[in-house]
Length: 271
Image 1: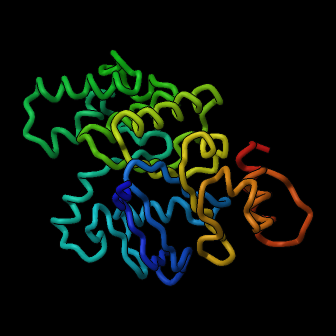
Image 2: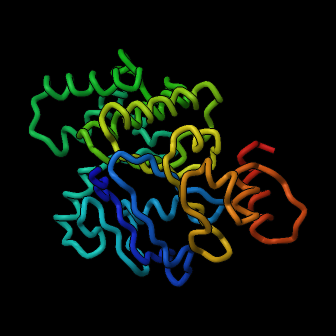
Image 3: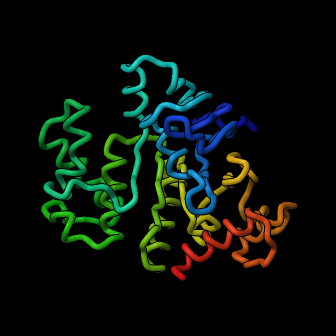
Protein backbone atom coordinates (compact mmCIF):
# COMPACT_ATOMS: atom_id res chain seq x y z
CA UNK A 1 0.00 0.00 0.00
CA UNK A 2 1.37 3.39 -1.01
CA UNK A 3 2.34 5.63 1.89
CA UNK A 4 0.29 8.83 2.18
CA UNK A 5 1.95 12.00 0.95
CA UNK A 6 3.33 14.41 3.56
CA UNK A 7 1.38 17.67 3.30
CA UNK A 8 2.87 19.59 6.26
CA UNK A 9 6.39 19.01 7.58
CA UNK A 10 7.63 20.92 10.64
CA UNK A 11 11.37 20.59 11.21
CA UNK A 12 13.31 21.69 14.33
CA UNK A 13 10.95 24.63 14.72
CA UNK A 14 11.36 27.23 17.46
CA UNK A 15 8.77 30.01 17.75
CA UNK A 16 8.28 33.06 19.90
CA UNK A 17 8.27 36.83 19.89
CA UNK A 18 11.45 38.86 20.13
CA UNK A 19 13.75 37.15 22.61
CA UNK A 20 10.92 35.16 24.19
CA UNK A 21 10.96 31.50 23.13
CA UNK A 22 7.55 29.86 23.48
CA UNK A 23 8.21 26.51 21.78
CA UNK A 24 11.43 24.96 20.54
CA UNK A 25 12.65 21.95 18.57
CA UNK A 26 9.16 21.06 17.33
CA UNK A 27 9.07 18.22 14.78
CA UNK A 28 6.00 16.57 13.25
CA UNK A 29 4.37 15.80 9.91
CA UNK A 30 0.79 15.74 8.65
CA UNK A 31 -0.18 13.21 6.00
CA UNK A 32 -2.63 13.64 3.13
CA UNK A 33 -6.23 13.08 4.24
CA UNK A 34 -5.33 13.17 7.92
CA UNK A 35 -7.13 15.13 10.63
CA UNK A 36 -4.30 16.27 12.90
CA UNK A 37 -4.74 17.89 16.32
CA UNK A 38 -2.52 20.26 18.29
CA UNK A 39 -3.27 20.04 22.04
CA UNK A 40 -1.93 21.51 25.24
CA UNK A 41 -2.80 23.58 28.28
CA UNK A 42 -3.79 27.22 28.21
CA UNK A 43 -0.91 29.50 27.25
CA UNK A 44 1.31 26.69 25.95
CA UNK A 45 1.51 28.22 22.47
CA UNK A 46 -0.97 26.22 20.37
CA UNK A 47 -2.31 29.20 18.41
CA UNK A 48 1.15 30.73 18.23
CA UNK A 49 2.44 27.56 16.60
CA UNK A 50 -0.43 27.61 14.10
CA UNK A 51 0.20 31.24 13.17
CA UNK A 52 3.84 30.43 12.46
CA UNK A 53 2.93 27.37 10.39
CA UNK A 54 0.61 29.35 8.12
CA UNK A 55 3.20 32.08 7.60
CA UNK A 56 1.83 34.95 9.68
CA UNK A 57 5.07 35.14 11.68
CA UNK A 58 8.65 34.07 10.90
CA UNK A 59 10.05 31.33 13.16
CA UNK A 60 13.04 31.87 15.41
CA UNK A 61 14.59 28.71 13.97
CA UNK A 62 13.71 25.74 11.80
CA UNK A 63 11.54 25.22 8.76
CA UNK A 64 7.93 24.59 7.76
CA UNK A 65 7.23 22.84 4.49
CA UNK A 66 3.75 22.81 2.99
CA UNK A 67 3.17 20.72 -0.12
CA UNK A 68 6.94 20.15 -0.11
CA UNK A 69 7.83 23.85 -0.32
CA UNK A 70 9.44 25.88 2.47
CA UNK A 71 7.30 28.63 3.98
CA UNK A 72 10.44 30.07 5.57
CA UNK A 73 13.06 30.14 2.83
CA UNK A 74 10.95 30.69 -0.29
CA UNK A 75 10.60 34.07 -2.04
CA UNK A 76 7.53 36.17 -1.25
CA UNK A 77 5.77 35.32 -4.52
CA UNK A 78 6.12 31.60 -3.80
CA UNK A 79 4.90 32.05 -0.23
CA UNK A 80 1.82 33.88 -1.52
CA UNK A 81 1.22 31.04 -3.96
CA UNK A 82 1.42 28.47 -1.17
CA UNK A 83 -0.92 30.45 1.06
CA UNK A 84 -3.59 30.36 -1.66
CA UNK A 85 -3.50 26.56 -1.55
CA UNK A 86 -4.75 26.29 2.03
CA UNK A 87 -7.65 27.76 3.99
CA UNK A 88 -7.72 29.02 7.57
CA UNK A 89 -10.60 29.52 10.00
CA UNK A 90 -10.04 31.53 13.16
CA UNK A 91 -11.83 31.67 16.49
CA UNK A 92 -15.21 33.32 16.05
CA UNK A 93 -15.07 32.97 12.27
CA UNK A 94 -13.21 36.30 11.79
CA UNK A 95 -15.82 37.56 9.33
CA UNK A 96 -15.75 41.18 8.15
CA UNK A 97 -18.65 42.78 10.01
CA UNK A 98 -19.36 45.39 7.33
CA UNK A 99 -19.77 42.78 4.59
CA UNK A 100 -22.61 40.33 4.02
CA UNK A 101 -22.02 36.60 4.40
CA UNK A 102 -21.95 36.26 0.61
CA UNK A 103 -19.43 39.08 0.27
CA UNK A 104 -17.21 37.50 2.91
CA UNK A 105 -17.16 34.17 1.08
CA UNK A 106 -16.66 35.77 -2.33
CA UNK A 107 -13.68 37.88 -1.22
CA UNK A 108 -10.97 35.24 -1.94
CA UNK A 109 -12.56 34.51 -5.31
CA UNK A 110 -12.60 38.18 -6.27
CA UNK A 111 -9.02 38.62 -5.09
CA UNK A 112 -7.34 35.55 -6.55
CA UNK A 113 -9.41 34.38 -9.54
CA UNK A 114 -10.70 35.68 -12.87
CA UNK A 115 -14.16 34.21 -12.40
CA UNK A 116 -17.13 36.26 -13.59
CA UNK A 117 -19.61 37.78 -11.16
CA UNK A 118 -22.14 35.04 -11.94
CA UNK A 119 -19.52 32.30 -11.53
CA UNK A 120 -18.48 33.72 -8.16
CA UNK A 121 -22.11 33.89 -7.01
CA UNK A 122 -22.59 30.25 -7.96
CA UNK A 123 -19.41 29.21 -6.15
CA UNK A 124 -20.52 31.13 -3.05
CA UNK A 125 -23.92 29.44 -3.15
CA UNK A 126 -22.34 25.99 -3.32
CA UNK A 127 -19.87 26.65 -0.48
CA UNK A 128 -22.60 27.97 1.81
CA UNK A 129 -24.77 24.96 0.98
CA UNK A 130 -21.87 22.67 1.84
CA UNK A 131 -21.82 24.08 5.39
CA UNK A 132 -25.64 24.13 5.67
CA UNK A 133 -25.98 27.91 5.31
CA UNK A 134 -28.17 28.01 2.23
CA UNK A 135 -29.86 31.36 1.66
CA UNK A 136 -27.71 33.39 4.05
CA UNK A 137 -25.85 35.34 1.35
CA UNK A 138 -27.53 38.66 2.21
CA UNK A 139 -27.30 38.34 5.99
CA UNK A 140 -24.78 40.33 8.01
CA UNK A 141 -22.43 38.51 10.41
CA UNK A 142 -24.18 40.15 13.37
CA UNK A 143 -27.34 38.28 12.39
CA UNK A 144 -25.65 34.87 12.69
CA UNK A 145 -25.27 32.64 15.73
CA UNK A 146 -21.81 31.64 16.91
CA UNK A 147 -21.99 28.29 15.14
CA UNK A 148 -23.23 29.91 11.94
CA UNK A 149 -20.34 32.39 12.00
CA UNK A 150 -17.84 29.53 12.27
CA UNK A 151 -19.48 27.71 9.37
CA UNK A 152 -19.49 30.90 7.29
CA UNK A 153 -15.79 31.29 8.05
CA UNK A 154 -15.28 27.72 6.90
CA UNK A 155 -17.16 28.43 3.66
CA UNK A 156 -14.82 31.36 3.02
CA UNK A 157 -11.78 29.20 3.82
CA UNK A 158 -13.00 26.66 1.25
CA UNK A 159 -13.78 29.22 -1.46
CA UNK A 160 -10.63 28.42 -3.46
CA UNK A 161 -11.09 24.65 -3.05
CA UNK A 162 -7.99 24.09 -0.88
CA UNK A 163 -6.89 20.55 -0.12
CA UNK A 164 -5.56 21.71 3.28
CA UNK A 165 -7.49 23.47 6.05
CA UNK A 166 -6.31 24.91 9.37
CA UNK A 167 -8.71 25.48 12.29
CA UNK A 168 -8.00 27.52 15.42
CA UNK A 169 -10.34 26.34 18.21
CA UNK A 170 -13.27 25.47 15.90
CA UNK A 171 -15.56 24.33 18.73
CA UNK A 172 -14.72 27.04 21.28
CA UNK A 173 -17.82 28.76 22.63
CA UNK A 174 -20.27 26.43 20.89
CA UNK A 175 -23.04 24.51 22.59
CA UNK A 176 -22.64 20.69 22.57
CA UNK A 177 -25.11 20.10 19.72
CA UNK A 178 -23.52 22.70 17.45
CA UNK A 179 -20.08 21.37 18.30
CA UNK A 180 -21.10 17.85 17.25
CA UNK A 181 -22.53 19.23 13.99
CA UNK A 182 -19.20 20.94 13.28
CA UNK A 183 -17.30 17.73 14.03
CA UNK A 184 -19.46 15.87 11.52
CA UNK A 185 -18.82 18.56 8.93
CA UNK A 186 -15.04 18.22 9.33
CA UNK A 187 -15.28 14.45 8.97
CA UNK A 188 -17.44 14.87 5.88
CA UNK A 189 -14.89 17.18 4.30
CA UNK A 190 -12.13 14.65 4.90
CA UNK A 191 -14.13 11.58 3.88
CA UNK A 192 -15.81 13.08 0.81
CA UNK A 193 -13.11 15.36 -0.54
CA UNK A 194 -9.92 13.96 1.00
CA UNK A 195 -9.22 17.29 2.71
CA UNK A 196 -6.24 17.38 5.08
CA UNK A 197 -7.17 19.19 8.30
CA UNK A 198 -5.06 20.61 11.14
CA UNK A 199 -6.96 21.57 14.31
CA UNK A 200 -5.83 23.57 17.33
CA UNK A 201 -8.21 22.71 20.16
CA UNK A 202 -8.72 22.04 23.85
CA UNK A 203 -12.15 20.43 23.29
CA UNK A 204 -11.39 16.79 24.06
CA UNK A 205 -14.72 15.32 22.86
CA UNK A 206 -14.12 16.87 19.44
CA UNK A 207 -10.52 15.69 19.41
CA UNK A 208 -11.50 12.08 20.14
CA UNK A 209 -14.29 12.23 17.56
CA UNK A 210 -12.35 13.72 14.66
CA UNK A 211 -8.56 13.42 14.86
CA UNK A 212 -6.34 10.62 13.64
CA UNK A 213 -3.15 11.93 15.24
CA UNK A 214 -2.37 14.60 17.84
CA UNK A 215 0.65 16.24 19.36
CA UNK A 216 0.55 17.45 22.95
CA UNK A 217 2.62 20.52 23.78
CA UNK A 218 4.34 20.86 27.16
CA UNK A 219 4.63 24.37 28.60
CA UNK A 220 7.58 23.43 30.83
CA UNK A 221 9.85 21.76 28.29
CA UNK A 222 8.48 23.98 25.46
CA UNK A 223 8.28 21.01 23.15
CA UNK A 224 6.12 17.98 22.28
CA UNK A 225 5.24 15.75 25.24
CA UNK A 226 3.38 13.08 23.28
CA UNK A 227 2.29 12.21 19.74
CA UNK A 228 -0.10 9.59 18.39
CA UNK A 229 -3.70 8.46 18.20
CA UNK A 230 -5.48 10.34 21.04
CA UNK A 231 -7.58 7.31 21.96
CA UNK A 232 -4.45 5.20 22.39
CA UNK A 233 -2.61 7.94 24.28
CA UNK A 234 -5.55 8.27 26.66
CA UNK A 235 -5.19 4.62 27.67
CA UNK A 236 -1.55 3.72 27.11
CA UNK A 237 0.57 6.84 27.50
CA UNK A 238 3.40 6.29 30.03
CA UNK A 239 3.26 9.99 30.94
CA UNK A 240 1.05 10.73 33.99
CA UNK A 241 0.42 14.25 32.71
CA UNK A 242 -0.73 13.04 29.28
CA UNK A 243 -2.92 10.36 30.87
CA UNK A 244 -4.57 12.80 33.28
CA UNK A 245 -5.00 15.49 30.63
CA UNK A 246 -6.73 13.21 28.13
CA UNK A 247 -8.92 11.64 30.79
CA UNK A 248 -9.68 14.98 32.46
CA UNK A 249 -8.66 13.63 35.81
CA UNK A 250 -7.50 16.01 38.51
CA UNK A 251 -4.49 15.02 40.56
CA UNK A 252 -2.98 16.42 43.73
CA UNK A 253 0.60 15.78 42.65
CA UNK A 254 2.79 18.90 42.74
CA UNK A 255 4.14 18.34 39.23
CA UNK A 256 3.92 21.55 37.17
CA UNK A 257 2.60 19.65 34.18
CA UNK A 258 -0.34 18.45 36.27
CA UNK A 259 -0.96 21.98 37.49
CA UNK A 260 -1.16 23.09 33.85
CA UNK A 261 -3.53 20.21 33.17
CA UNK A 262 -5.80 21.36 36.01
CA UNK A 263 -5.88 24.87 34.59
CA UNK A 264 -6.86 23.53 31.21
CA UNK A 265 -9.50 21.28 32.78
CA UNK A 266 -11.05 24.25 34.53
CA UNK A 267 -10.90 26.44 31.43
CA UNK A 268 -12.40 23.84 29.13
CA UNK A 269 -15.25 22.98 31.49
CA UNK A 270 -16.01 26.60 32.35
CA UNK A 271 -15.33 26.23 36.06
